[in-house]
Image 1 (tube, rainbow, N blue to C red):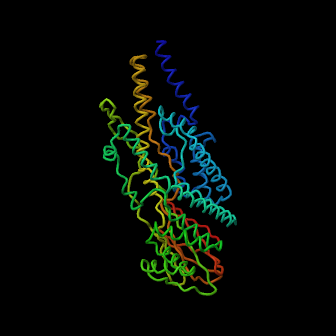
Image 2: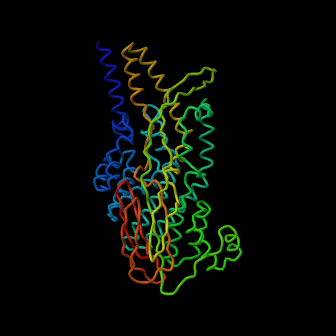
Image 3: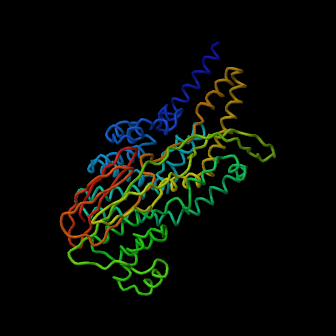
Length: 474
């Protein structure tokens, strides 16, 4: 009896120590992140952004989800027009990214945390903010600075967003290759993985990688123009058009600046692709740009997949893997319609964040599977040892712990929009104007003041039944 009780206490104590040492909570071991964020997402769908922010799971600065919680709060504070608090929350998240990058260089902190995941699950690893989330962090931070009257601060952020994408281009291919090689080295068949794992291709769509974001480049170009830096704007518009070549508003911006800057050779090439620049700039006019954010990205779910692990002695053993997955299909883009002076304009997509998120998850599967394979083998060895020392009770307790603690890592920045679209109106008369915005059967009148040779920026958001907007002159 004493032996059985000691065994129970040993397992409970081990789990408690593990939670304390790895900066995770018990709920993180046994409940997925998506499950913990349900109340916040429900409030966000209703447009109750303060309630949604308050529903984000509170964690301290040592917690593995601290950076992620700051991203969620910052996004919801932004939606609630609390730009100063949103700015501060994003700053905290950015500092966490810098700390993680420094730790990754010396491979100490990161290595210890990944070692702890061998006996729990991937939630024991500090959340590493993926590149597409980093670029959106800086994009929203740029808007925070704009709404607080600092174009200079906004320009710093768009430069940081561009650096994120440049860094991703340099490192992504090598990281994917190394993860694939490591998975094969651990005796896991890649074909078996993709045969057993639910297909996410319908959600990935046509994106080539998980980090190239035309919206961040477009916003960068827009702000560079506001800062009287047309050459930099032209470079970033060209980067955006490489990713989203069918966006006609973007096409016109590229043609306009190519002509304005005297890039005649490039202008000729662009005109062959997109046609001639159609707009003639009028005096006493300005432009209106609408950024339209639609919906919320899907939450990750858990999928159970049975996969064989081939050992060095040619033995094969099947294990059940708990892996994150995005389910469903890409929702249809419902455009925003703007009417002004008997003319109508429809928004066009410039980034599909759901696709980027799904591609990022698919690319990370080899690394996720490799870590879980090591963990499952280690847990199986622990179960066998406890069975020898503790008999049936040891076997049962270890088996229960193994099943209960093996949870998929469903963490992601879940308050991001599903997609972003844009509209651009040129040659709008200087002074007071009215726009009629139509979306999902509703109409709304927006009052704006257009300044000469300036840009009036409207950020329009539609989530569930909620719609809202902010305006600013650049």
